[in-house]
Image (cartoon, rainbow, N blue to C red):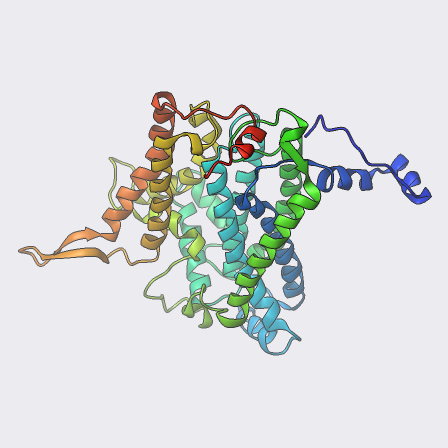
Length: 433
């Protein structure tokens, strides 16, 4: 916290000399050793450290891959295959990087859901939440551009579909599309642009992450009760208490990561990406990676025009609005209670929201013509039942209603449970939840 006084005392002459000129050791000690941490943090708080680990893995493996990758429409696909076969441990680096992206998003989604459940976006942590949202948006952009680089069928047509959506934006859309593609279609200039930005953005993410951690240390960590630290008895030093817990969680996470890398490296990918890109042969079903499927489902849910506004533009607006609304969360929640532990009504709506997000991801991976369940056909031989498109529309409506209607209204009407007087009181009470 910003009012935490430093307890670091340099012992050697070198430490004293450096501390008087560049107190970097003091900064590390105050941030990761003696930093006061709420004593009631659970394992949901370990995903911040896990995300830092994931970012480090992605940057290191990405730099190594960039040494061997050839950003050429004619050679990109073969260069990836050469990395897998001819570069020493290239298969390991490539699989770690590809699966690392999925692990990164898996951890960030849990991190975001935890922040949503425990109210980590509420004052005074609004800037902390906004910086986290910026990191998430940069992750999406980086992952999309990285997905294009293998230059397989799904990579190529994923770029075609997503970039053409930009062209649906009135007035400026066509100009942005031409700049993004480097021409009038996805080709060599597009690959050059995406490779450059994919290499650059992880370092931007690292910079914003530093700001994110800085903001965290200014305002202090939230905790499961949502009650602010009131005395020193509410805290424990970051090391060894939090570091041991984070380290244990990282080990478990790395075991899961290793299972995918060594035993199921292609389980989270798409088979069509092992076919070289062919502009003359469109795949039967174009889908993004799993972590973008919920937004893809929102995009495809709009199949009708609204007056002069085409469905394509509405879908694009809704897709970007689904991300933008997350930025507004600190001002949409009207409740004065942070943690949903003490908000029994809102807790159920949160569970429905998590189910909605998972269901949207499932819909995004299905064909628009698929049926969730069928009740036969009508007189014109059209299927009757719940279609994937209709289910996506229902889920999209709840997604936005959760933020724009339910959260503000429940915050005003709900009677929360009594809050503990302090963190220590909650811990000593031995709360079962």
